[in-house]
Image (tube, rainbow, N blue to C red):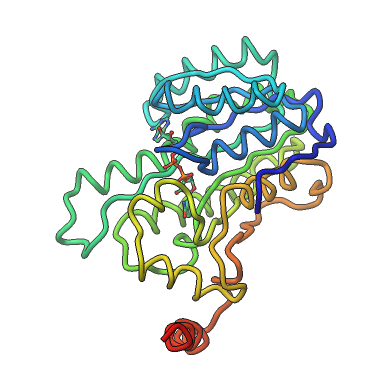
Length: 278
Ligand SMILES: NC(=O)c1ccc[n+]([C@@H]2O[C@H](COP(=O)([O-])OP(=O)(O)OC[C@H]3O[C@@H](n4cnc5c(N)ncnc54)[C@H](O)[C@@H]3O)[C@@H](O)[C@H]2O)c1
């Protein structure tokens, strides 16, 4: 989907935190797209990232669209950093209506007994730990906010097995934690939902996945293409806003249908496309 160009003030007056708001490399990853769309729709957005320069490119994009945002730098997987960044952000925001936990890293691929335990610890502490740290730190402010919504960015790898020791399990944990949050805080007016991206073409994917891998990523989806970061941002906007007020605890796959395809249909779509291409 192209970068949205028309906006409707759907988040005017809202205060949001987006973690992992920068992007590894040139282009637009999901955190950058979510933060930019929220700001373009009128929200004041705190951009959390480990890497100031990456978050700065998001700030530049937002400022260029007359949006309001500020960068807060630190390691969200570290509880002390998460606490400091949230405190600083809340002082600037003046409150909080929406929290988007977007940080996720991939590592720990391969058979479990061959993966260094440090890699597994790292994926769990980043992918699950950042969500836990941010929910703990932001909840008191969120409980007093207006929109009162948490959006966690999981992955289809948290729903379907990919033979990965750490990434999939960490995302499955994020999905379950989201449901627990929905139960724990539902009576307080807080909704919690997940977006599960499928094959999304981000700069990181562009850098590491080439040729056949890219073809299969597209071919395996019933709609036959990869998604992009703006597809995820639009889903996050819907789950943040009042249009989804009766939706909580769910995981919304944004995946071109990858999670509903049976094994033979997936096989045929990939092989037929390959033979059609000669
Ligand atoms: N790209 C895909 O195809 C895909 C598919 C499924 C799920 N996802 C999920 O989408 C999310 C975003 O992916 P992306 O490829 O757009 O992001 P990305 O790799 O571009 O990273 C976004 C930012 O997160 C920051 N970050 C990483 N660890 C951090 C930490 N501990 N503290 C603070 N900041 C940190 C990085 O500096 C980076 O700027 C992740 O949760 C990922 O697992 C992506």
